Image (cartoon, rainbow, N blue to C red; front, side):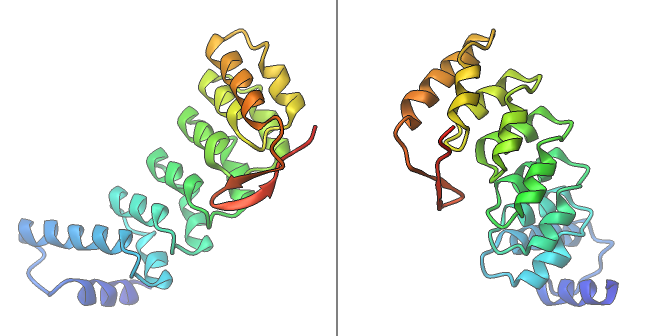
Length: 189
């Protein structure tokens, strides 16, 4: 594995003495650029997902060409910034988005409620989250069942109850909604 990664580094960056700070900075920049490029092949993104550099891992997590196996690995990343982008990537398996709904970081759970292609059961659970911003994101999510949204209309936090009323008005007659660019049926109850 290390030999493959080293081969990839050589291909991405002309060899110089890595003791040179400028060379290291240039190498990191090249890795970060490759991680965010739509031209980088999925197998290289998979390798880049194992780097120690947080920005490179963030770029891999955000890249729409990143294979699901790399996103699964990155879903357990110690950096919440990486996990945020995993949630937003359309290649992230639904089961991983469901798992991230239990993340200890409020912001990760917020992004799950807002962008994640999570199950309706997870949205119902997130409607009782301790963080008001998570509950508000559930309230405006097009996939939130009407009964769950109705319960959020009486949330003690004004921003949550207002979001629920807005969500109810917006999605009342919707038959479908967009999730990661795909049309999915809107829940009926």
